Length: 336
Image (cartoon, rainbow, N blue to C red):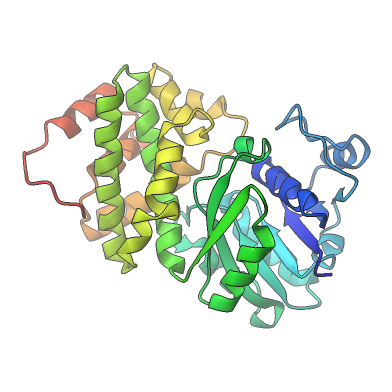
């Protein structure tokens, strides 16, 4: 079973991960709730809703049976939206027979509880059912992984040996994985960078240039560090792949769903119209809601995040919000 992996979720990133392991000659089982999607993957070896040109090898199969998927491998890769993690893990827990290694690639916090996704996995999967939990993060657009462009990631776990196991599990000729034990910091960075990517898209859509976007990314990093201090994490994490690395790619790339939604808002769409136009989940919206709760309750100074919240949830005018941020009181530059 060591040359097998199970992927829960057949979205864009789940599809890209399937290719990584097919290239490593692993046997891959993808779980999807959609019978039509499973049939396409099994019969046509494609997943055209996400990628027109990708053709799976025969080593990739899909199933709509969760029990079959879970019992297939000791590695369970969770590639579902952040708001589905709790329900999916609850369902998995009911069919577990042997302990598994859970690898989460989703990014965000749970609105309402503000819990990390690793915490949700710990809560919903009984201790006897999990060997451990690893989070995989970093600058990684699925659209580029399927083209086999070089990508660097970080595997993070409280268990150093487990992080190293996942490091070697994923690494191949175009995927290089580093390790970390800052489970909280990596997930905080992955959450905040999606908010900043929406902001970056907004200002670009409004017609601002590279100077403005560079300022936003830099001051956004300061907000990420500030939020990290509140969470009590290792600040070095924010200057690595999960922090500045993922922030740069998400806040500057047209592949980024968060950037694209922000771009549409900046060009005049309402937040509701922009979100409705996205064919995939925009994690930054839920992240904004969750982080804003902490900002409000704990008096954390994060003006860009507050501005994104006002645009998404209070229907404030993007230009007005931007002007308010620019006109804030002058002060010394402090990162965090």
